[in-house]
Image 1 (spheres, rainbow, N blue to C red):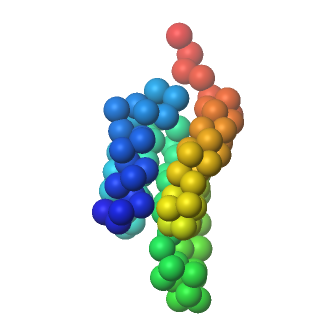
Image 2 (tube, one colour):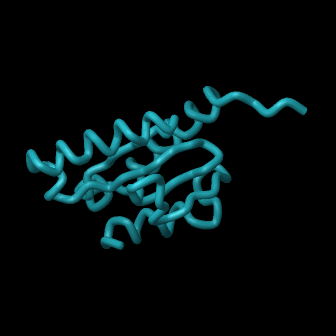
Length: 109
């Protein structure tokens, strides 16, 4: 894990984000996502500088298309955002997690 992934993981583990459980380094099909919440079908990716080159962008696009085909929402943040203001990243993530939770179908009881 990168330094940024460790910093975010410390905040996500033990249901640290709105009570949702996240897994780290979760395999999904032929890919591994940085963090994944099964209940929300939500992947979080932290991108270092190499993600901004043309070949990596193409790879990420194909990867994200596959994940979307599995009904998984992918949220990406650059590592620099985690370095500069992890609280802002967590606020944005919390807002998006809550919005995602509202859109998922509820189980029938």
